[in-house]
Length: 238
Image (tube, rainbow, N blue to C red):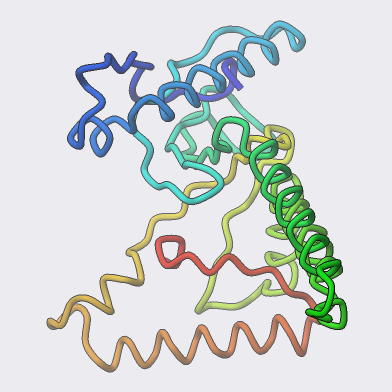
């Protein structure tokens, strides 16, 4: 990625005294610093293998964060496919060791469910708790591979091609890995602004129109395209 992407800010080490509320909100704290350095290591490894040249620095402050990953804004430093240099992209980077943490959680859930099912006289085996945990695990673990999300984005762009009321960012598959997803940056306004604000730019009519578009899109996805991919995070609705 280093030879292709350019970020606005460099990595900054977070000192012990900076790990306060302001530091955590402003720079992302130690976890964010560790994540950036891991991205830098991945970048250097990719650059060494590909023989590319060094690009811009790794960012310091994310533009968004979720339970699995954080998102940074960057620009292409050279042509990538049909995208010219200077194209704005969003770079989604997984939290450090998130796969190991999720696997550990499911291991604990599985053991607890199995233990409860074997407690005498409770007769909890009919609830199939262990099977439920296994099914939930089989659904969750593939979501930790960001290449799956890139594939689903490509399908959305195909299924909703020609739609004028909704758009999906284009993934840059050649720059995407299991831990990092790179896609075109789409300008927009967070949907939460229409929920929290009440003015001439965020009217009740606008909220009703957004609700109609969202409902129609979900219905088309499920019943017309026979496909389900959802990430119900309000911060990702634009």
